[in-house]
Image (cartoon, one colour):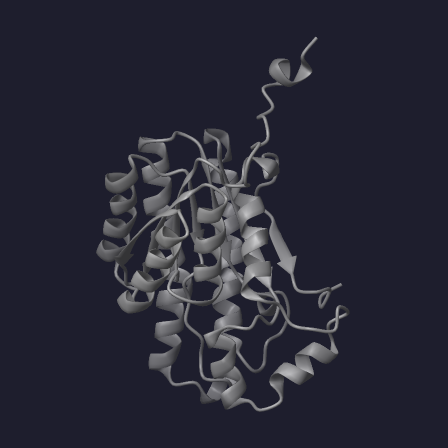
Length: 266
């Protein structure tokens, strides 16, 4: 008896993790988003790259195509609901459907105590890092429903959302809200076959963390000292975790916030 057929368990992908899928990625012009776009395309996905930085998006998309992958890009402002919806719609227009999405785009705050953060900066952090994820998920769920029927979404959170974060309090709070949105969406859309998870990276070598280092000299060394693996992450390592959660290999995983932090929170 073939128990796999009787239980309805999906067969794992036989090629790359996201092989054959159409993927939408925000913040895809650099850092973790660009690493994810390269990885997903290399493993057989067709990718739609979205961010505000058109020159960077174009460069990553051209690199993917030069390597034999399929990629397009669209300028998208996560603070603008119409822009987010148009970007997701573009994936469907270009590739005919949407299967998976990686909501990676974010902005960082100026490091420092919460009472020293200007209200305008707080508003920007909230709008991009929390509301932008909300807007993206709403558009992505609608696109998956209308085309593929089932799919998966991964939101990029932060290990800083899982504890007190005195140096980046607004950033950590917004990312903790992303964790809650992730869990709520997993419960809401799981019955439809749409899985929603998050990853919580530790300190990763990106333009964002280099900005943090410039404002807080020594922060990388302080964080690394508390990491059991004794180092920080490369963007490609975070992308691998997102690829697994978006693939059929994680078909019974939803509503989780996966730490990818070298053991920092163990």
